Image (cartoon, rainbow, N blue to C red; front, side, top):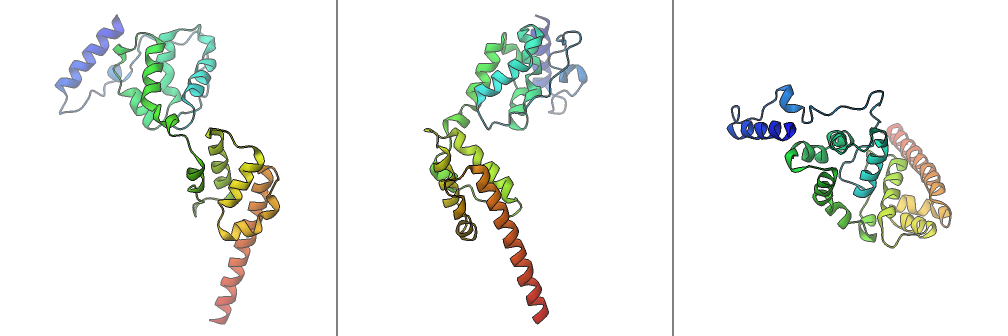
Length: 214
């Protein structure tokens, strides 16, 4: 009841406004002031959810990490923001907490808000469009690419995945990575890094040769 009254007061302040802005006082920013962690319990290092990935997996992981709090639903809601980042955290802080009486209320709203990310899972075309950026190393790009097939339905086996990965490479890489065919994805990354280093060396040699002739 105290939390509902506090949030009602906050809503009235927001409607009245302070020069059109929300209150930034500590008492108003601290949204669950009556919630405390059990004695001796340390807040885990949460993996941050940024709207990408499996929503249900994130909720399960979060609840598992706070299993030592005695299933206190208000506490679970209060600290959920610690597991969010970016637009998901902004969404959380902009909610009317009086609408959440139990954990299920909050979890349901969270799922419905970001469910679209699961509904638009990647397909083969989206994998092909995932190109290496100039600022990325080959390993960074390959790891990012590798994360996407885990969301494909049906799932790719390792051989099909490596084949698709090779087909998505630029000509310089594709021609020099054929030895990775039918090998584990980790081997494809190693071969790609060797090709990357070789291409860098070739470019340096060409650049130096051009300088000597100019």
